[in-house]
Image (tube, rainbow, N blue to C red; front, side, top):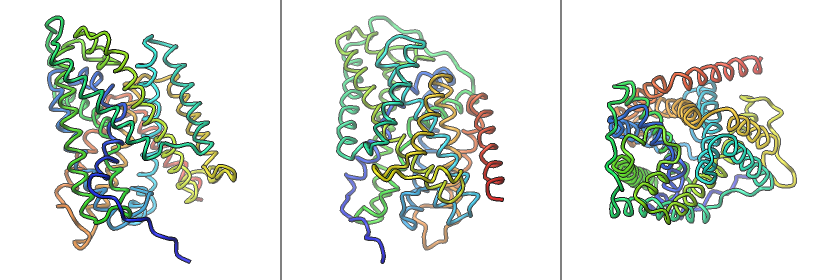
Length: 410
């Protein structure tokens, strides 16, 4: 007997809210510091490049989802359109990239909630991951209603921050950003800022729930455009207030709030940033574990991960493994390293998405092939120009996954 289909009741506004809720997480609160450190005065060129690559990736995902509506995303698209190995590369890229994203979200939450650098923040981040893993094991995940609440809180905090800073003005004239690392620095910044756009293609997974397929493309444009405008406003504000103090800043939004003398608003900013980070973390932990389960069922990952709790109906072993890896990461890596490694894995994921979309026949196409070619080139370029440590670790982990699958399939 066939399974019932999902109700097609979502309109453009609903899809835009889902996309923005996925995008406006911790990235906007933490990514500008590492990006400014890499690009210097070329920061906004990097932001523009990241936005263009994100747009190409999102349109490819939407085009694929309209024909292959499934929560499997590019892991499924790669398997169906290109073959099992391509699907594995997408799935493995997603798992390793989003696992690093979980670590970055936890560290971002701790950085804003615990204003003491060093081990206090690391321990706090690890405890948050343990608590959220336990919550997910009991079937507690971020609901759609909570996503909307967190989106509203994040928007209020960010818009209020921009308005407050421009209304108050800095208490001193900041030093301008230095020239940065040239073209390579700008590309590194684009790769790091790409982390702040992660989540936009969540709209593409709504293919079975929107009233009409063309809603997906419209919603992607609106959500991505809104995020770009908001990120540009936040970035301009940070540069205007912090200037040369922005590069390397771990909590730039809080630092800028303090710099304009609005001491009373700093706790509000910290609470908003912490809430956005925690909301994204809870959803990411659940998403990574479910992709891990799907890959284990196809034997792309070890079969013992193919386990679902009879009581709570969650992928228990995958949840525990992902939680343990994230705890280890927050204890040993820094925020910039986590963001870089996350971008490497996710850019690999979207390279496969663009490749699969490029192979679709004319009858399934909704966007020009040039966008997929640009997306493929952009993903590769940003991936290989990320900080060297992120690239090397990413390549090693990617190779381990490939060797592990090859051995396991014998």
